[in-house]
Amino acid sequence: MVDTKDSEIIYESMEQTPEYQEVLEATVKALVNHPSDVVVQRTLDEMGVLIRVKVNPQDMGLIIGRKGDIVRSLRTIVKMIGLKHHARVNLKVEEPSLLDRNRSTSDKIISDLKVEN
Image (cartoon, rainbow, N blue to C red; front, side, top):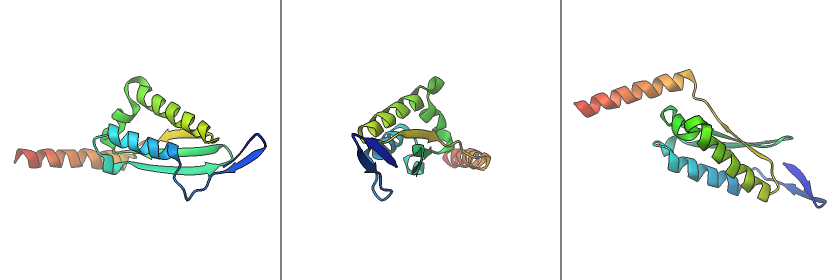
């Protein structure tokens, strides 16, 4: 991303992981029940930086929160850290596909059956 501040041009490299991405990934992993399923991807375009977060379908409610409170807070934190680094950062939580939701439900049923045996 290219941003100008005090006539200085700042380029964000895709090779380095920015602080806001590391903070977001650590926070999301701390909130969910399936931290190994957390995927955080970053893309750059003319609008700024887009961070996409994908979690296990069973963890969607934990990330969104009641009335969207948690995801709103995560967006605020990421945006503020991004501003510190002169980057316009947006956060999108990817909705699980129908296939992911069905697979997650069937995996839970199977694991519940194994526990009962």
